[in-house]
Image (cartoon, rainbow, N blue to C red; front, side):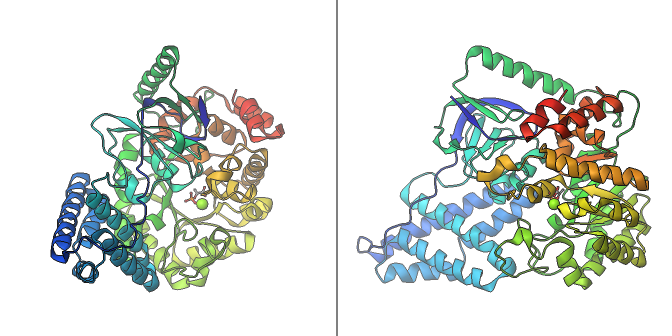
Length: 546
Ligand code: PEP
Ligand code: MG
């Protein structure tokens, strides 16, 4: 049997399935056996065991995961909560139900407070589930653990789940939800985990079934034949060899240079990117630095982080994106309003213009970092719609002292007026994730429309060509920093459409570097023409891949 989804990257894995346990059913409202002290003692033990487990997991995980897990561990022992649980048991409610009700009530209060506290509310639900699982003697929800390597199957993964993945054990991720640019997929790519997302029927796979998960084709083959296993093992060995190939700068077979840059979420990722041959940074997602922040970061705090990053790239290009708040990356200090369609709402540059002091502080911090290091700092705005917004941002940044200021092409309207934009911007960086989402009107977070979220679609490629042509006519660089640049075959087509740099998760650099070496610019342009003439994404992929 085969299941189909959207592959992330080019990897392939073989292994047995292990499913994320289903969430526990809500405990029925009912009384306990009659002795409140005994019932509370039972619950108290579970609270202590769960708190200890979470803290131990945190200590093992280290880094950001440790902070998340220690906070969760403290929740399990919070006196406000434990007193409430006790009071409910004393009034006759069963232990499981008392835990459920007390945590749910606290969760509601936090949600009502909004901002950072509201974001922590979902962690409470997770802690509550763990305690109830312990009381019932069943496995805790969340990422399962196993001594042997496995392929994890889940509806989707929460950020806390992904932080906990044991990379030596998880051979691949298969999720029912999510598209190729959902942040689960981005995270999988950044950690070099083989992943297939948006897989209908994924949750019907049973524990222990051996599958081959092929991200290059998006196919999951269950109970594979020995021949199929041997072929997959050969590919795994081949990829391991490719990642050991010498690291060179990005170059085509005819010597045309195509700098290969890294997409980063934090300065701490810089060292690994340099080790994988990143020639600079094509996208720093600054909002990732402040997702948990209840208030806007200060100039000094930001300057420290930016200097830290830039110091890893002396003399090299580093493109930093202004805060891109909205939709799947909410920043409560930039836009806290409820919106029916946040992807079409007050996000990106729109939110920054409405909160100009936050933008001014960020750009000021970048000016400080620019002066303090020798990196070649470029700054760009996200979610820009037209030449007027471009002019506004470029002028604003330059007035504050930035040297190179540009915009991201993510909204189709910007590509339609690419010639006007190229006149006023120092550079354009194409965010193919959002450009595809908006061109195809397909929510990048929604598994059911993941098949529309395909940057090979000729409509997306035509917009890229408009941007490439406009850049060439105005003598301005046009890069790509969306996930499309990490698909080696598509990377070649993007170059053929006029893109001059490619930026991607560092884990993808080796594959893209190897593919670029196989074609001349003329051949890349020929592939691009064939892809542009196709009528479907699949057709473009077929005709533009060789
Ligand atoms: C994009 O939209 O392609 C992009 C690079 O930005 P993000 O994925 O952070 O929205
Ligand atoms: Mg984007």
